[in-house]
Length: 318
Image (cartoon, rainbow, N blue to C red):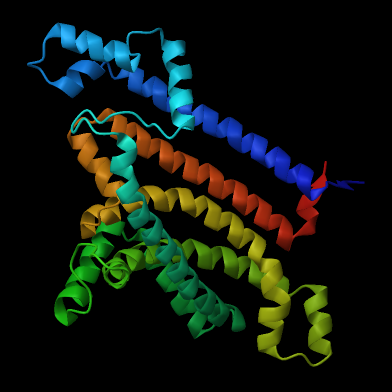
C-alpha cells in the first residue's frame, strides 16, 4: 500500500529538483556562450581598441581563465545578481533587463487571467450538454485557436479591433499603469486565445469524468442543482489536470511573448531578446534565455505543489 508522503518532504524534494534543473540551465547557457567564440573585451571596446586594452578588460572580466574557473565565477556573480556586461551598450545586463521584466510579467499574467476567463465558461457550456450545439461551437473555437499563429492573430486583432474602434493602441506600452493595461489588453488577448483551446480540451475531459463519478451521482440524487453539481462538486476535482497543463503552457507562453511583444512593440523581454540577437549582444541573449528558463522551472515547481492541495493522492510515495 502506498504511504502518505509528508508535504514538507515533497516540497523539499521538489525544491531540490528545481535547483538541479536551474544549475543545469546555467551550465548550458554558459557553455553556449563559450562556444560562440566572441572575444568579450573586443566586443565591448570595439574593433578600434588596442590589443592591450582588450587584454586588460578580458583579465578584469576573467575571460582569460580556464572554462570551469570562468563557470564558477559566473555562478558567483549570478548569485549576486550580476548578469554580465552588454557587448552593445557596455552597460550591466541586469539594468537592461530590469526595465523589461515588468512588461513581460504583466503581459503573461493578463494573458493567463483572460485565458481562464475564456476557458471556464466555455467549458462549462460544453459540459452542460455534451454533443449539443454549444459543445460543437466550443470545439470549433478550440480548433481555430489551435491552428492560428500568434503573430497572425495579433495582426487580426489590430485590424479588426484596434484600428476601427481606437479603443486600444496599435502598439506601445504607455507610461502610467492604466496605459500599461490598455496597451497590453490586445497582446494579452492574443496570448489568451492561444492558451484557451488546450485548457478547454483538458478541462472538458476531466470535468465530464467528474460529472459521472459516484459522489456527483449521490449529490444529484439528493436534489443538488446542476450548476452546484458542476461548480462545487465536479470542478475542484477537475482542476488538477488544468493546473498541470497551465504549468506546461507557462513555458510555451514565455517564449510566445517574444512573438507577441514584437508584433505589438511591447518593450518586454521578448522584444529585447530579438533586439539583442540582431546586435549579436550575447550576454543579453543568454541572460534573457536564462531568466525564461528559470521562470519555467519555478512555475513547474509551484504547479506541482498546488496540485497536491487539490489531490491528496499525489502526496503518496511509491
